[in-house]
Amino acid sequence: MKKGTQLALGILTSVGGFFDVGNIATSAQAGASFRFQLIWALLLATVLVIFLVEMSGRFAAVTKKALPDTIREHMGFSFWCVPFVVLTLTHFLILASEIGGLSFAMQLVTGVHFSWWAMPSALMVWLLLWRSKFSTIENSTSVLGLITLCFVVAAVRHHPPAGALLAGALPSLPHHDPSKYWFIAVSIVGAVLAPYLFYFYSSGAIEDDWDESYVGVNRGVSVIGMTFGSLIAIGAIVVAAMVLAPRGIQVDDYQQAAIMLSEAFPFWGYFLFAASMGIACLGASVEVSLSMAYTTAQTFGWNWGEDLAPAKDARFSLVYTFSIFLAALITAFGVDPLKLTLLTMVINAAVLPFVIVPFLLLMNDRRLLREHRNGWFSNAVVIFVVVLSFVLAVVSIPLAIKGGT
Amino acid sequence: MRSLRIVTLALVFLSCGPGKVDLTPAASWASTLSYMSKLWIENRVPTSLLHHSVDSARKEIEKTRKQRDHPQLAAFDAAATALDQAVTDGDKGAAARAGQRCDAIAKALEDLQRSVE
Picture 1 (cartoon, rainbow over the protein chains, first blue to last red):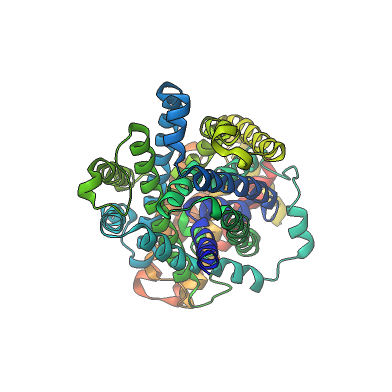
Picture 2 (spheres, chains in turn yellow, brown):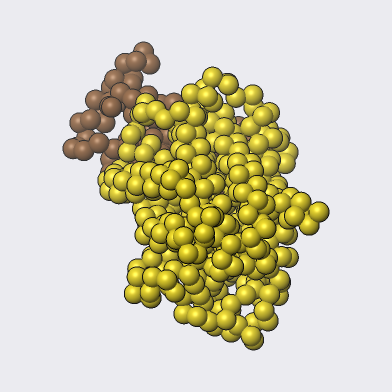
């Protein structure tokens, strides 16, 4: 019964926690500019995230250790230095994007400019971390995050053409603006494969006291949760394709995305979008801050744990405190949150090899994982998509700068 | 007559200087304001959204005009200002007219962009 409850909660967490500012931004842009043509990028990223999240949970359940801890122990601090720095930088950029998204959601509701909401948003995130236990944070933000299912409902209400949807599930060349097309494709991959996600997941499994008996639950959570989560992102692409694209509205600003639910939900659409964005970004901000603190504490061998009182893991608490308010400064200075998000997502895709290679090496370690180590198929899938993402990212960033995206 | 206008505009546009200016973002904002004006009239979006969106649209107009000025961009600026004022005054009739102007400008900018590509 307990495993069943854990499975259900885990799926809810994955569904409610999947959709964040990166998915909102990239899905809205993809649908508005290229209709259904980029659904394949989302599907490709979802397959890979299922593999990575499952691996991360399996690792924690079998070894009862978190990833950064083990990489540092087995491969040495010098080896771990580069991935750690890369991971910390991406964590920081993602956190800044999520706080930017949360602040923008507050602008949508109140009319007050998002830069004024940066510090109050940071305070909200910090208070949740300071005062709550891990399970409270995990469950509450994820259950609230189910509001993002409104994108799926809206997509169904718009009756999208099935043929075009299926065609979009297969990779195709763009009909126009190829540099923008590939930039968004890479951004979609980066949005789904945010490195914090699987590093956080392994630490979260330790917080939840998973052991080897949870390997099956983990598999269920990864496959079902991530699949349903990606349906929400597909829903957002469909809605943008049906509402914004026919009107010639591109998403160069979150304000343009905010009106996309107004057709399916005539009087609630705008506020549903704001609520979805706010809750999704709040949940993600909490996760990214925690992930940053976990990674840092595990790298340096400090005490860590959200369930510990801050006095017992002072350095862990200091890391998330400092990170949250520093990241909020970027929004407070008025940096365009959408542009920041899109660039961050492409950087996510570009740095994947640095953060996944150490992870993949551990997953093949017979001493650590015994019969639970990776098979050849898992390794092949992960390596293929990581290399593809890296190549696309390296090509897309200069194109995007040239094209002014 | 409309085709002649487009060709004339394209020639004027092309003669103004070197380099290619992308009018798609400006056209997108014109479409955005047109659609938002309809939503506002139907009370589906708050007034603040229109104000902020007009600000963003005008920044885009200014950015595009710095690269190459054009009568349609000036017309868009005027329509956006009119929409902003209409929303401030709560005048749905004026908002509808400004929205229609934005719609026409969006189409003209899109046609112009296609003719220079």
